Length: 560
Image (cartoon, rainbow, N blue to C red; front, side, top):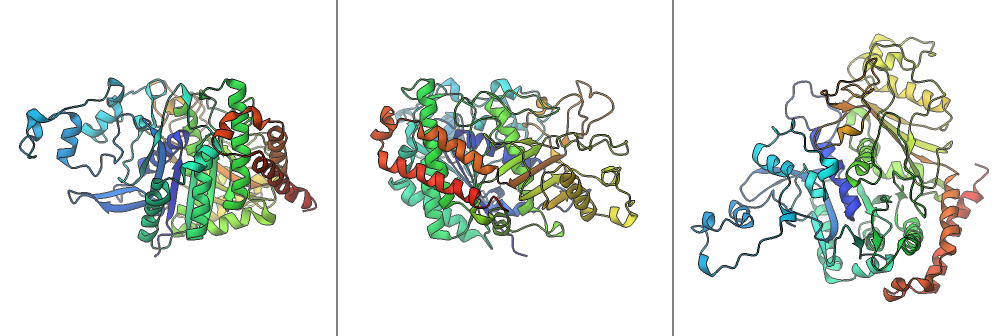
């Protein structure tokens, strides 16, 4: 059976926060034994098997990520999984431990040690020394994480991590600031040659590659770098490209820019980015925990039974990763769930040229405790929260939905208004058909759309360290259900049901319209950084026209 591989690309610091949670969630759900295993997830779609220098079998994400110099903190650029023992000892600074293994004269070696800020955090030390036995320790990640490498559970292949040496990562300001800056970066020798070769290497390893999943920070220089990469991928490989532009919370200003100027630069970056994605992606779905993404990025989305700090990158990125983990089940489920090919999924949603879609997330999905009376599925309660900024939930022309963590007893009680009782045969082994039917009916009754194919699976999303379990209300029990009694303070959640959907709706035209209105008010001449990095006023004017043309696609099809 072909593996239907997907190659993942991550560009930017926030994208790597989201990606770290995304890979952590998947790996924490690996089954290491056959007992009780549900054959629902094909991990080979996004992970690859390999072998390190010691002959040990490795299983790593089929992924390339990009960040700025200094963003890795304690982690070496080639990771740790493929390092031999000598390299590990050298990095620790213990020259005596390797004196007999290398032909150097110890007294002639100059040791340059990194600062204290690059020392390994407690979680990484325990992970290295204790393996999986550290899972009961309290690490307080929300207050101690300074880099996405601090809570990284998965280990990456040496080719996965790619660093832009020309710019330094800083928590104080972002120097990699403009779309044109990032676009120019793609032309240097590293990205033009070596990075492209790494993509081709992954392609050659694949049995039957479906395409690419791309997440990236779309408000700074990574917007230009990513869209130039997508142009080359489209030309060289001709595969489906599903893109998730990420709008992070406003934690840093750009270099030599105050708040208002930073907002204006961000708007120009977004306009240039979206206009390029219209032409170079099969489908793009902006994601953010913030209500607005152009200017005034202040208010955050609210989730019932979830409380998080929207400015905390560790917590907010976990919510977006939860969406990605659940939505990608559409492509990485095993054959008995009838997964949808990536190309078919995108084609189904981008009809009429509407390749901009919106995202929704139910976290945790409001289902009752198994066996209890169903009182949470009435039409007055929203089933999920919107994750696309500058837009709201509306009736969709097409909506694809994935739900994980649905159990047999919940299927039977999901809709008390259903006149036909669920038959025992429908609850046997894997009751996907019954669950999908009931959920489609429920979503239609909530007026989310009339064409809502649903994939339902029993395996819930695991909630294990280092996922921020503290964001969940005590009203949610250990398995993520709304229980009759509050969860005790010493009782940790271990899993949760999740609903995720991507919808294609006429209202998306208003999202593009709002971006165009804000972007055309920006005076490019007052933003010298764009002139310095090669963006001409004529090109920006053409970009604004492209946004209008794209918006008109929605107006032209208003009769649909």
